[in-house]
Image (cartoon, rainbow, N blue to C red; front, side, top):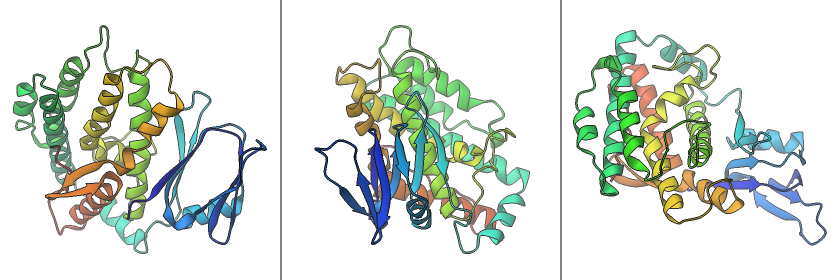
Length: 298
């Protein structure tokens, strides 16, 4: 079942009754809305004048619904996660923490190789030069010692958008703002799946900044980034104004959890595929598998 994503961009009072999320709005012409909590996968709170009850937060967390809050620039800045995400959580933590350095290097090699291959497929689907990426995806070594991930990313973005002066930079010109928003949503999807699989999102296989609470999410989301890029590319091609994140653009980007991806030879919503990816990662930590299951771009 595909979980729903709710976005609140206006002032609202959010509470719960009879296992439903109840939304009331200050505007007199807006009626009360109710949505079953069990149907919710993500709730995005953007407006600074949203009030939410503790009872609702508790039920959302128990349902493993990701609650995402936004900053004054309207970008996602925090993610509410449960203290207990899996019944075998402490055992799974131990396997994750005991993972050997050679295993982590092999897992990062797999991750980078699939990411570059998916970037190449995306470029090719746009009739852009992809041969270098196709070659690099097959040359990644254990631990990516030659830094193919960064080299490929620079080449990829130089060739993706036909926009003068564009380079991938968080504070750069549009559509960097759209990419930032999309990647933030993807990061929350990844962190939610990691917690649900009983692992720590802060302990990565490659990223290890002590100030980063989502290092593993930043690792595992890498092969999924081209799906966000493809969505942003379509928005750019539509010709709309990219200078600000309008409600319509945000609605488009909030479709990321439901995007169709191919994983293990079958079509699946992205958020479901991510759960399969994180479960396969745990199997690698446990020792029953040596391969992370990632989606393959078509």
